[in-house]
Image 1 (tube, rainbow, N blue to C red):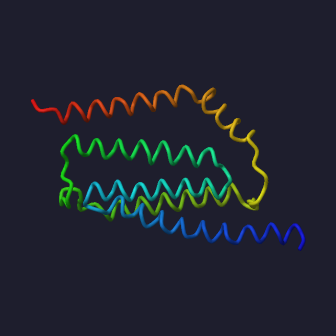
Image 2: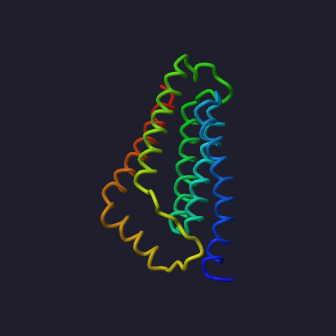
Length: 176
């Protein structure tokens, strides 16, 4: 078996896994914006964010995958659910979560899909990913050094904004 055949055999399972995960993510993303139950929307968001983490694993970016699972699923979604519970939002189905402008949203979404697809296809024409390569600790070190040096201020601003959102939810939920 040649090296090219071996590399091609790694691509097939990764492509199948990507297809399954992508289908689940698309279904859940549509359900996030179409469901009338806020808690169900948050749970569908968990599936979308977990799919992003699985895609990071397929790309052999373990550090980003674990960060995705811990930060986004473990903290952000819990913060959303905490905010929902604190503000005493309607937990069951609520007709006020829908409006008559679905057509405009679908048109804008399709236009955005077309622009992003065109941009991606034009930018990455002829580029092929290979799987099964070696991953070293240097990749994780490089990513963490980039996050905590170059992007330290945006990272901290995001954490302050999340703290402000939590304080705002507590203030809204407090009885007068």
